[in-house]
Image (cartoon, rainbow, N blue to C red; front, side, top):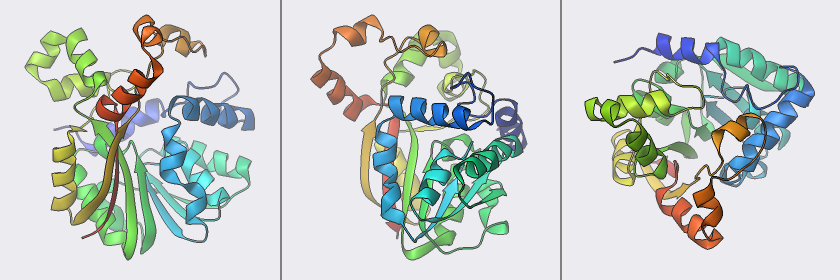
Length: 270
């Protein structure tokens, strides 16, 4: 089992989405371009967050990365506490909040021991693409449950096991996958290879995980297939792979809803 120290070191070396702009890192233009690019390829994210719906509420973000969603919640009027295990990412997140002229309480914290650093209750616990990167996700979700208000809500994105992404990874790396699919997926799950920990879940597995940590799932849906060729994308060009170009849009949308990479879960305290 990989450790949280290894996870922190990996994200310190290359914070998530840091390559999504050619502008100087930490500049206002850099943050604007990173956000525009992220929401272009993940348009379901802002709708799932519903930033404006949390005006005046207390929001806890687990795994803030460079702070994009934390800043958008704060812009919408929420009182935001955002945690991350990576001090390098948090330094950028603080710059982002300063550039956006908003107040966010950023805390360096291990998601599996949140209550040692953070006090609740929170109206919303938000975590998009972070809990599946901690060695023991059940501990992180149990900690989040202790910090949510009795009538609060969890909005969580974890990676979907029954997805085209997992199928493609296994097909490209059959030998590695045969030795251990979870490890094969972890190594290839992010834009930069070698991620120490990445868990994936079927709908049933995700529901069981939430129920075991005293959450009641109210909604679960699937989204997001990344259709672009990686080479041009790294050059900030959006060129769909030939098979996605040939596919009718309605078929692509149907696939996204069934075998997409993002499992979007809404839950309340059980």
